[in-house]
Amino acid sequence: MRWFVGLSGLVFLFFGVMGLLNPLWVMDFVGYSKQGVGPLILGEVRAIYGGLFAVMGLFTLVAAASPGRNRGALLLVGLLWLGVCAGRL
Picture 1 (cartoon, rainbow, N blue to C red):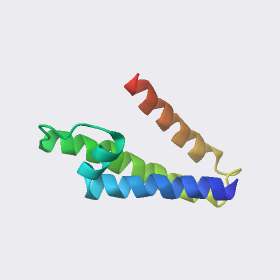
Picture 2: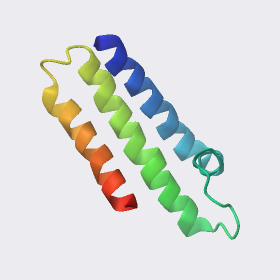
Picture 3: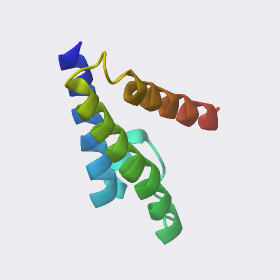
Picture 4: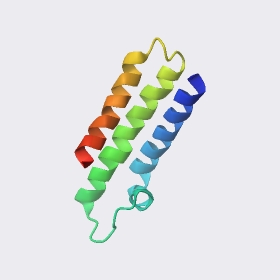
């Protein structure tokens, strides 16, 4: 379980850093159109795919040390995913 949680944290952190540093790459990766991209759109991509994913990755990496003791942090990450999914629906 630790390796799965740790690997998930690394993936989240990778996408978070990429979202902050290169939001156009993230937009390409998830399939968003880059037509008419302005500063507001790039700011939103940085906020969600950068900031949110970076924090989710850090929480998950910290929780990987002892997943049983850090159920609250893992629950928070799961709820964030559910919130993102609900927002897209």
